[in-house]
Image 1 (tube, helix red, strand yellow):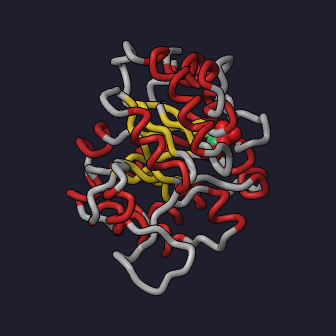
Image 2: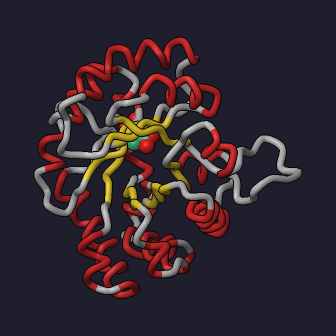
Image 3: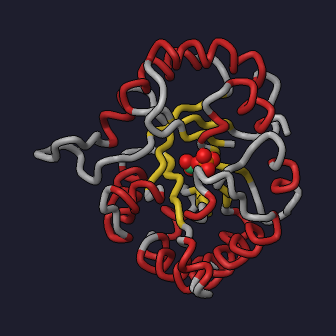
Length: 244
Ligand code: PEP
């Protein structure tokens, strides 16, 4: 169960969040819990979750170890502050910051090289869904990204299906729509990496997940977890998603 805080919260607000959130999920053993705050809050977040079952992820990762890449943060830098996961290829990065299938792959490889677990996001835009291109888009994103990994690398990633039209819009994919897309992605995994890999990989759904709709989504056997934006900002609401 993962939360993406996008560009919200200061370090002080981060600490206040975890003071409230930690006790609400301390007995939640049915899942892994990962929260991805902005870079400036990562150290505060890692400190606030020490000794708990909560892990901290970044929202992005630079593809190089170090160098002249203004504005980027590298894997070794994230490791040094105690980060364990990172989102890559979030649709907001693809949409507003020129992220491409190629750079998503580079960032995924960097996460793996530097010992972070990547949560790799894929998903179609509204016009692509309405034009019947969902499967083609998911296939392109898979072929140009995840399919380029080795079997050993693939075993370490988590995939997030995040239809762009459902992110931050209040429009959730129905459990059936989400499960259908997850089946498509899992079939791609099976073709490339085999049945065991397809059975083992965790595919998260993301897009306006809330305490109200999480149960129905998680009732779909295809949906292994969720990636939550807006509703992960409030401790009570994210805790009730985690403990659905
Ligand atoms: C996200 O940021 O990954 C996301 C799914 O956002 P929201 O839950 O707000 O739609």
